Image (cartoon, rainbow, N blue to C red; front, side):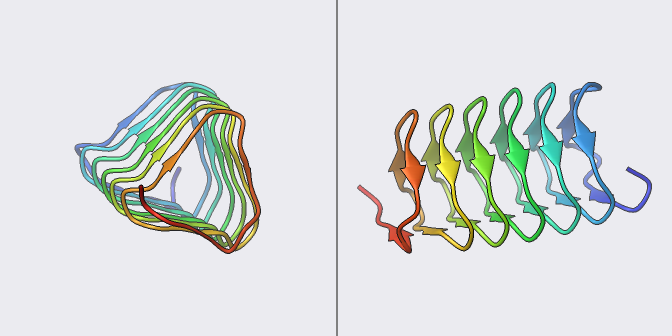
Length: 116
């Protein structure tokens, strides 16, 4: 974590791995066994659950909830205030609109998911 930008109010579980280049915003929480790869952006007030994988180039906006076991692929974008349930796979380059809801075990490959 020596070359990351992590806000002093973010909470990182000691069993999480944050790789060089990641940015984590104010008041965010990163759960145990989560892996955040370099160049990923995690906004303010984000909750990342147990075992979540966030790949390089992924962008997670402010106020997002990501449930356990979810994978966010390279170049994916998750809009402000979205709720991503557990065990979801968000594939490369997918754009999830602000305030969207994605339910458990979904595989998101479409270009954009609209808010409900």
